[in-house]
Image (cartoon, rainbow, N blue to C red):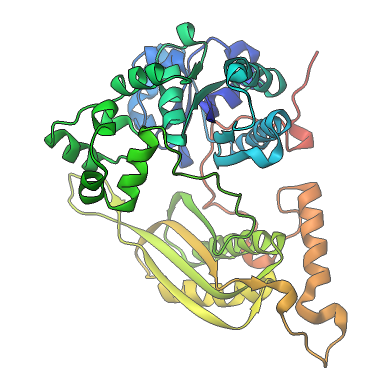
Length: 427
């Protein structure tokens, strides 16, 4: 048996953890630059707020209904996500947890007796909420897909289900599949949902009764067969180990305001390169290729708003693989200069490091002191200071000081768990 633990309105739940006054009040969280709604509490949903609504359009509605809005606070969300995942590892064992996303995790419950599954699911929900303050829903089923079905249905009527659903019998599985439309199935996109409906297949139960050859022909080959088997209760999607070392590292952000100066573009690229290099060193790697891209904002018609233009990018193969920040900043700034066009407005930029190799495999230079080989000591010192003090206490001058291009976060809550000067005060 498998379970999936899904945090309820995760970003909103995180905001409420340190604000008890918001526990039963409507809350929304906005995307980068306070653009649109990306997380909604149940109370806000009842007032008609929907996902992806632009903030500027519903600003008056939020104020009229007393809905609290927050800018994205990724430091807080990331830390609370880690706490949720660590709690799950404590309950079921580290090897039985697969982190699927920032707010979801699959659990392998194959070692749990069938008669204990429901009580364990309730224990998981209760323990996570007590230890972290984040409310979760738990769905349990014979396969990953069926656990996703159970989790979705547990959220339909949270009061009746208490955010827990266990599909531990063929009858319960059949009933759940009948209540699930094909468009709501994990792994079925919009185009495939339309295609299935044309075949007269409207719910998951009907799909589960289709022949394997039909699925192979009409649902993308092996992927479709795997989905069909999962619906039939045959595990076909295995638990995956967490990927420790990434094959590519990217750092990219939207600008707070449109950027028109090369100086600002170069500052942003230098800053993103520094952050990408830090990530690279955490996995003890070195990059042999660096790519830089920018996204211009282009005006189509006088009566229309500005929209994003096509992404423009360039890359360069480095003379030797490196993880030293200044050795990466120099080619990155050269690429940024080549991408910039005077008179254009830019909304976004990013840096991608690829061609990654283990840092230990790099050959040192015999003609320089060991301490200067790849500047490992200097980089290690910078990383340790920045990690302990936060907010880029040490940075290269190319990253700038004013940073007027930084992402807009006018409604961001304090970073309660990762900054000493922003700790929650209790009286």
